[in-house]
Image 1 (cartoon, rainbow, N blue to C red):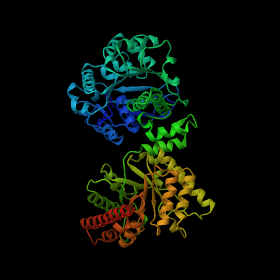
Image 2: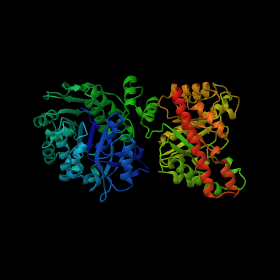
Image 3: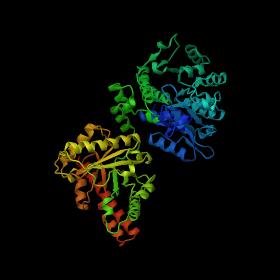
Image 4: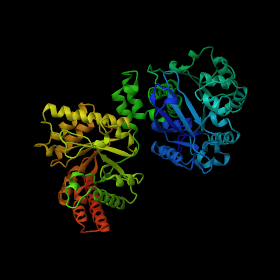
Length: 636
């Protein structure tokens, strides 16, 4: 069946605040990581990562956390047309922690929250008709208002020939049969809950739950008896999750033992965090189910996705991409604590980054030493001038994608803050200007803890002056610093750009930069971006790009810098670089701002003249790059 959407989930959404400290009580958490959450929302994201066209029907508040959920769904590739912004209710919050291997405390803040405000009127028949499947979760059957919305969506789905699925997702305290402090509880017997579930089970083609969840659906703690009770009211395929024992599917009569059902291979990994594992499992299962794979294959996907979730911090952030899942199934388990498998984590990071930057036109005004040396310059004037640089960049970008800035936080703090949320790509330098061996700006702190204060959309940019002929001690020093920085960037979920300019250190040939690139990869450093100097030969570009792709086929790409070149020199530089697809664009500074900065610092021009001059030059460079790219594509 060809439809615009593969699946539409319906139900709860939340902002998950995960305790960052592991092994302590929730009472003692000092800080929290913020993720998107809620079972249907997690499943929508998890299936989108696996290549399905997913949507979610839920509710969020008209406030910052609601916007976070909606924006994050967009980043994950989820259709948000079904997300209702409720002006009267707040977005749900959940506080979670990892106490040990068996205890995962959590508190739901869901009193009349936004997703519980869904009504029948929020279910658009035209939208439901676009989906090949509707996936519901149990919580929204607990309230008459939301139950009516779910039932309408299911009825419309069936009328349109779509499949229907239920993740029982039983949380006793969300059904009112356990207290607020019992968020971790997975089972409390309740005849009322059982009766409510059984009144809807006939509406589904697929029903998924743990043994405890089938106990509540079947009204007995005997798993086989519970499955048979469900079978009496539903013809759905029943998939029973068994934790470390994997899962089993029953498409027909329930046999005398669980081992008699259809299974897929399990994955013996270390249990780090069970929260959200069921949603990861469901994502993999739905991928196989909707691709019409056999049950062993669908269960293999499901078990693997559940294994990823169990081994990582957070729910949605733990789920794999389709690329990552394939890599894992082909290669197998190297170490049971998947989050510490460096090769796997690189694939996970690189294939799940948000945003797409196929073209990069970057105005670089992160210069510090060069501006400080200008006559009349003071820290205050430099900061004010960098705000003018930002205004020039915004004028040229005019809301269009593919534009960015490089700006520092020491002298350009005001511009850096103002750039947030503008749609610009934002790179922020960390190196101490001109340092060799590499030294970092003091604002990062000796432990690089300053990166924890950076917004998520800022890219860590580091310029390392290095050369293949440097002595071993210099290389060891610089590699050690970059390694620490790269690890800190990843820990803080920040992208990393590495810039190298060997021509400032020694003689260069066509192999020089490629050798430097390989040395960093050999040291376990995988930049998201490379910033490279303009090469004088096509061979140098070919070798540099080949070195990157050989080591990291998922790289974001390369931007070429300017080195204060004249416009005609940049035109020739761009023409060579643009022949290579891996080069996404440019990051140029002094060619754009140099003249305006000197004249503005001397009081010869006012703000508007400076902005206009820089905007004209930036726009001209962007047009030069666009022409070079078009000519390069024609030549190819």
